Image 1 (cartoon, each protein chain N blue to C red):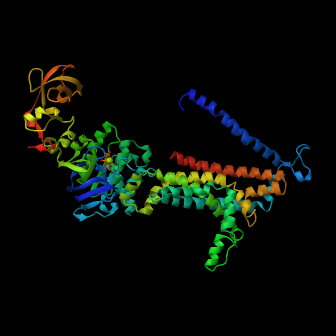
Image 2 (cartoon, chains in turn brown, red; image 1 turned 90 degrees about the horizontal axis):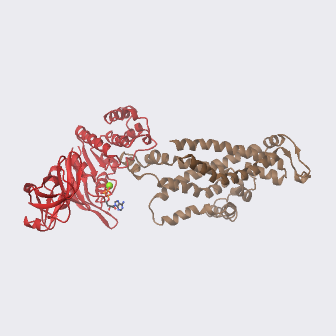
Image 3 (cartoon, each protein chain N blue to C red; image 1 turned 90 degrees about the vertical axis):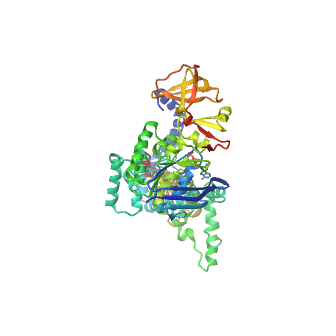
Length: 292
Length: 334
Ligand SMILES: Nc1ncnc2c1ncn2[C@@H]1O[C@H](COP(=O)(O)OP(=O)(O)OP(=O)(O)O)[C@@H](O)[C@H]1O
Ligand SMILES: [Mg+2]
């Protein structure tokens, strides 16, 4: 936007959107902040009409000193990190494969994207009952067919199972972004590298990966923000048992199962801070990448 | 050494034959230019030599050795692409060193060769920049640098100057010619600009629709074009090609006369005509004359001082020793 005039026009145009978004975010945010400093146990007769007791930072202190806090942080990091690793690696591989000329390309591409359109609850149920169930599941049948003991994935390898389910959902997203990035790579660059004597692996490491770096950071950034909040998958499968209680799930339990709104809100504020730290960190990486 | 021989090489994409079987020998140390209109298969031919495209039929020999199935990296050829194809995330130094790094040279050797190439190409001050921070001409030089450090048997250029502005193009043209004189390495150069072809080549290969129309030195092509296509393609402004009674008088289907081989006079001559547009270039003037000889205007080249006003009546006379005659198939009549 070049002129003063067009700049102020632009501001005017985006004002409604900004106002709406701010309201959308600010009202829940300030309510969460408000509750986090109050004792609010609806089952014990606390209510907004009677006024809530101010408890200072007590909720915050209780949330982090609770024995479930650190395991929840750990579970969150393992799930988010695991899904990121799986989706980025498989996403790059799939993107490179899908970029090749092949028969039935269009259909294969649609199939690859399909999981993204399945609702999280549905996909978690599918995985839980059709694949990972130790009695009727597909994997159990395969294991039995080759003479092995069926495995109760969701209790014995709960985190791994969750990472698998969530990765399956997010792989299409990663693949799609990485595929478009792959397609934007200048063919002549690859040919130049080929003439320069770079073998397949070198072309991948020195030409393709650097070209994909920006797309990979974008995938990581967007996925992290969404993955920090995964919930349905846990509720449907393990309900937070077997070490799969993430921060989000812990907050849910505090508010809805223990009916402690104040404590849950304090947890929510921690989650906001954590998400922002991640976001700032990632924005810097992306910013650096965009400058280059 | 860098002798390249194509034996009955052909190329089809699907059912479309882009290059019918073709023979060509490029001698060691020669500067060969492939020239022809857009889409005639120049790039395809170059890519067949490079090995980036598989031949449909025939053989490619490099230094007499069969190389038809050799992978590009093993042919000992270096290519400079039209888009430069620099690696955007690597510095100029790393770009130039890339082929050496791939060949497994040690760091010291790499550095020495890169420094040398940078000196030759005036890139020393830019070694630590990224390609994105360079001008078009500098990028072009980096691409050439990346080619010369490999010390290839031959260089392949695909329209390397087409992304540069006119002034820079002239400069780079000279630099590439000079590089050739100094390195004495075979160069194969693709362009659709006949001025580049004329000024740089030892040998020009004129292509049309994948067929070689003529091979020869720039002067041979200028003086004795084998057919009307070459006659019209080589030389600027284009040769005037005249059909009809004037040609029949000389026992030809078509006659050709270059603008610089026509006399223009106000008093006498062979063909009477009217001056149309005049283009004054300072050194030369081009007159477009509508004459009795042909329905199309005839271009005449005169010295810069000559001037005729629009619509002036003039006479044109071709210099007989410079008249080209062609038969009904467009082939030259000696
Ligand atoms: N990969 C391909 N698949 C199908 N047809 C192709 C392919 N590459 C080139 N062609 C066709 O081959 C013909 C020659 O193409 P080529 O690129 O060699 O032309 P060129 O002489 O280099 O033209 P220009 O001066 O425009 O670069 C064109 O008709 C083009 O459409
Ligand atoms: Mg071309």
